[in-house]
Length: 161
Image (cartoon, rainbow, N blue to C red; front, side):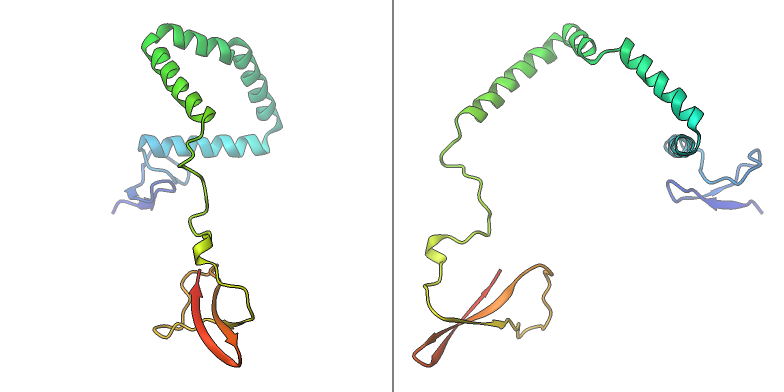
């Protein structure tokens, strides 16, 4: 019977490769092998000072040889249609940023509007009780029952957020 294992990356149950003598954790799919290599690099980088130094020097040398501004400049030169489209889109973004449309204001969707405000007065705050179910579904919601006290009688207003 073939020995099976569960891949650490994709979670599939797969047959062990008999050529791998150590404990196999990843299947042969390209994505899983990439995950295995990344995990090895991460572990090696954390625990091996020499490896970390070698990578830092190598990355610095590559960045010095391939500077970002020259890469982007070369890309724009070799892809003129991209550069023209990007220029047009940037002009539109700049126009939007200059003149805000007075009809589009960013506001909280649950903010109180002046017509919904409750008039000033004396109120009693009590825990809100939902008669259909005793559970409050939204954990961060503040639910209260407001009762307006007018000349000894309570007029009940129920409000939830």
